[in-house]
Length: 151
Image 1: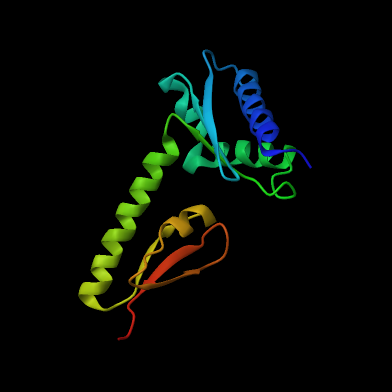
Image 2: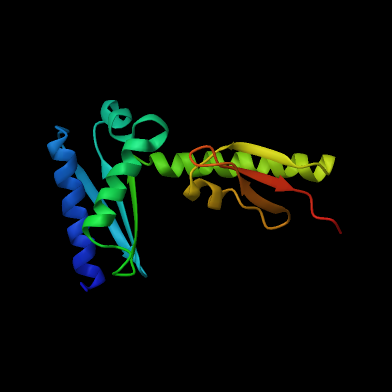
């Protein structure tokens, strides 16, 4: 097992190398290590953001998965979170907003409400403490259902 600091630098170097090999110029990777979470944010030319993120974030998710496997995150008990030009931050904010709207509708109508298809990370963000929620469907079309709690 490697220590968390060396895993952080290994993940950072891998992300930089992958982006350079994808022919992006002026790649800057910044990040930090909080508890056991390696957080990396790559800054690239904004016009190239869509290429590295891919449709619905699939390319970014794949890059994250490859780096996670290389650094053996699970066996080293670290988590890895990679963002490109704050894409995930904007996506997370949008998911929280959608979940909040759904929760307000459920509280008003007292009827269940389905959110759009989401990956497991997004489904965890969409949870709301004051209501019940659960996932339904089969990957990749799993979604969150927000249910009204009976008093």
